[in-house]
Amino acid sequence: MWKELWASPQAVQWDDSAASVVASYIVLTLAVLGGTAAAWQAAEARHLADRLGLTPTGMASLGWRIAERGEVADVVPLRVS
Image 1 (cartoon, rainbow, N blue to C red):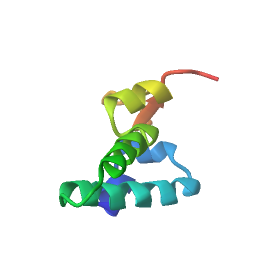
Image 2 (cartoon, rainbow, N blue to C red; image 1 turned 90 degrees about the horizontal axis):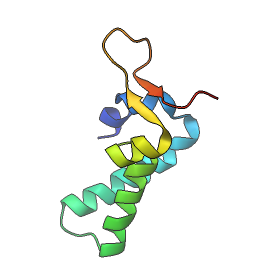
Image 3 (tube, rainbow, N blue to C red; image 1 turned 45 degrees about the horizontal axis):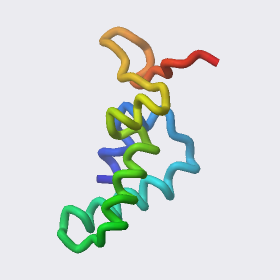
């Protein structure tokens, strides 16, 4: 799961400080998928997925979209600063 997330289009927008967030997301998600997570853990996994831009809601809140074929970046910020 670690390798898959870091190979995702969203990962190009993460810096090294995202590593602990990704690790936390993995631990919580595996607990949810394994049926051992408490409700707060499931809620935190959803929250982290949004913060990492792994959901449509998260991508929208971060102002990201997946690049079209032929664009240079994998994830393109919608807002130009």
